[in-house]
Length: 91
Image 1 (cartoon, one colour):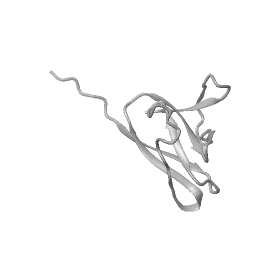
Image 2: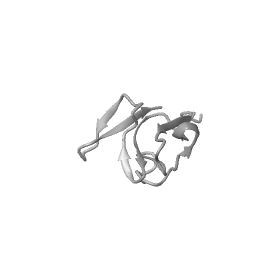
Image 3: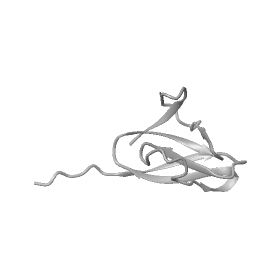
Image 4: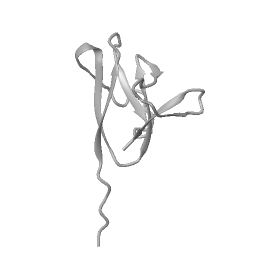
């Protein structure tokens, strides 16, 4: 009998950065590539992207115009060993 694989879920990541020229999403789900996932700029400077993730806990940060920054909407964070914190998302 085949084991049913865990169902992946779509998660929306968004950041308000009205003066940004480019916003990227980096995390352990994309090998922390700083320009691996470009967010789309929407109305009022809200940048968004959707990522499909398997169940688990993932770390991530945004890269705004080349600068790493936190998700201000994320309440759960963990030290990253570089003197800063990574945001956590649970799927």
